[in-house]
Length: 187
Image (tube, rainbow, N blue to C red; front, top):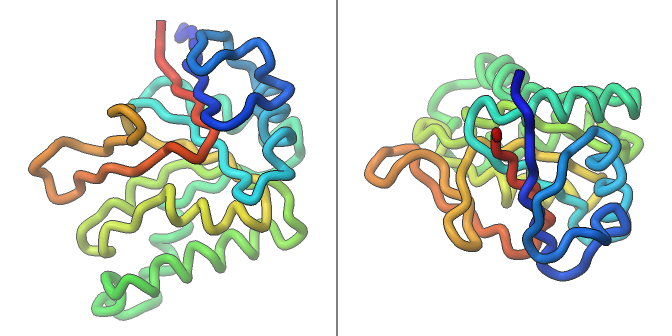
């Protein structure tokens, strides 16, 4: 069984759920903690909480448990986005407009009332064929209307999240400085 720890980064403030969390602390993570953090950021301009970690660190399990407690859905972005892309000409994929618009539409459909979104499986966004869409920027925009918990399969490099490895076509560095980042690691 995988036990999780959480490295917690709160750059500008500490939500009530994290009052015991300094700039970087190790705490056990429960779905209730994630829900409390989403409630704490609900008044922010960008209501984005990033669960950062490599594959198999428990991001999906945590998202599912929290979503279930709030009677909300978990969004498998790869699946839903692929279904939409299959109905469009491939020539539109990398135009820099189509994919972000489709993601916006999906989020509006899944949360028309501003309920929290729990986003998982975002690897398709890094695809060069789709124009390498930055998930942090995409969900930063979406989090203006609703709280978003984003599972990001990446590792921390200073104040950036790094997806893939340098030299690969899907490699990307994403700035994290304005967000609450929950860095998930197995112990």
